[in-house]
Image (cartoon, rainbow, N blue to C red; front, side, top):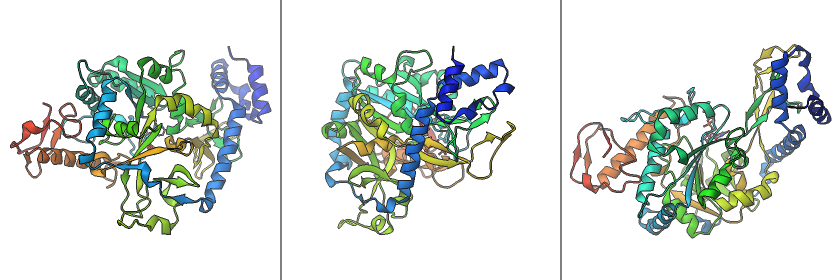
Length: 476
Ligand code: UTP
């Protein structure tokens, strides 16, 4: 039972007593719901993180003061295919030992794509009609097969959802029988939410008996690893990792159809480099491409947004002709479990939330709901890369864009990062793999290879000499 008096005192002390403004109008159920919601928010903590976020936001506006430099050359490991074999072997060994897990960031609302279902359910129009979730699940299954010695290892899949995506994501997996994976190795958890804050620093309401909230960003991952897997559960992702003996994790965004889930090469690179954290990047070649790059900011690793880079530095090139700042971030990370369980909690309170100024639906002084025409408040978000300034060594693994990155961000027909470009890039990759294996694919034939057949182009020798004349979904 939530104690109303105590809650009122806490919100009063924090200068947030207006959350009770419509109390007299609420019926018993509405009061109970509001109290329950308010009891899950610590108003003093909210005040503290808002103050810190606004301070960091103001400092970032003076970012011209920050010293931005390319990352140290020895932190970058580029892998032309010929060099990747030992790394791949090391990564597969770790997978084979049952030491590798994967962490999917699937809490985003995908507003730009505009689909009502979670992004991972999206069908980019492949011959098979597979969703992004299915492609990822089948890559995990194939990875388990590739790493199998005597028995098949398990690569547990931790799926971070949010309030808006959890139920629909879980039912999609259940309806699709977990895409052939063992249900006990697919672990759903949920990132947190934070109240939306008005321009005056007040917790906003979006109904007389309800606080307006928003997911806390993909960096909400770190706190979510310690939270109960579901309400009432005493298990957490960190406990699950520990009980399974998982030492290494690959974390990635849901929307990249080319993602190499649990990539043994990347994992091998990070293990060999003995780092606690690593990041996969693709090479930026056009100085004007609006992408965040991994760089040093005031001597610490970070992702520096395009808008923060002085023009001259954005254009600067190495003697080889490559851009100095070229490590384009693709939401693809490596962590040791030890880093997540021990190091992150030690510096977590130092990470400032980012401020997103938004038009937030709210209520007026009469309790009437309205949608503002101009930004009326802020949403607070952490980014997954906000841990970078806190690591002394970061492995930066550069991979070919055409093989590993084609994100689904925009609505169909936008022309960039949309379902059509995702489909195009995936089918182009499969055509390359088949051609390299000695097959021919007729002009206009869209040949899709099931991830259960090949993870990264391996095992296609059986197609040497074969000619694919028409569109086909190859499943064996
Ligand atoms: P984006 O920043 O591209 O956001 O997420 P989005 O929700 O997919 O799309 P828009 O901006 O609303 O159009 C990058 C990755 O981070 C995850 C997303 O699911 C995606 O995998 N993410 C984002 C979260 O897990 N939680 C969040 O709160 C935000």
